[in-house]
Length: 300
Image (cartoon, rainbow, N blue to C red; front, side, top):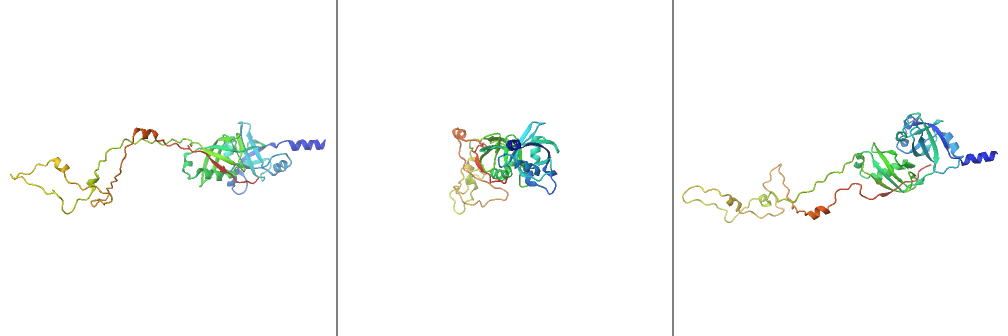
């Protein structure tokens, strides 16, 4: 009878309830490693029970708030909490709609290894990071698992970025310990694609490059002016100004008449046909394919 009862205890999973507190309420020094990760702190009695049960390693748990019917998954970092208490990251309490001291159910689970995940930044400031995937990979080393629908918090350069887990494969909850996982990003919340106006057809240059050439020096043919025989002033003819001899434009010759504060750029503008406009693709953010994110081995 005793052996049968002991055998049944070994086969049953770990399933109990604790009072939940945020990491900021943990006695001692501030634990930022817990706050910016996906692992919790449990009491020593939980470790004693877990070692006598038939559970899979690494230890993964499902947290459930029965009042709001919200749940998430996590790992365990240490067993140093006070009895009947657990300490969890604040972002996890927000997902479960828990307040300080609320009761939460915790159950040991076994999750499949992740192969794919998709994240959506909750703020467009995340786009300012040069290498988003490298930053995410480094931050996910503090996580043991991911749950679809959770909004996790990662810290980078003294800033906290919230990321919504839109999708995970092969299930809604996956383990990310020692795995090769493809990662994709969705457009951040509130992100608007920049508008690119089509360039109008090329127009003729308003400035003749020959006008910017320095005046010729030395002998110039037919540069003299004539006088009327009757002594009257010659009428100005606009056609004569157009027929003035201009020096051929040559690239590389400086403008000796340059005045400070006036810069002119001359460019060769090529006309764009309608066919070329139709073939030009617009800007498509996040159109690239996902890359493989590798996580290092984590401590149990």
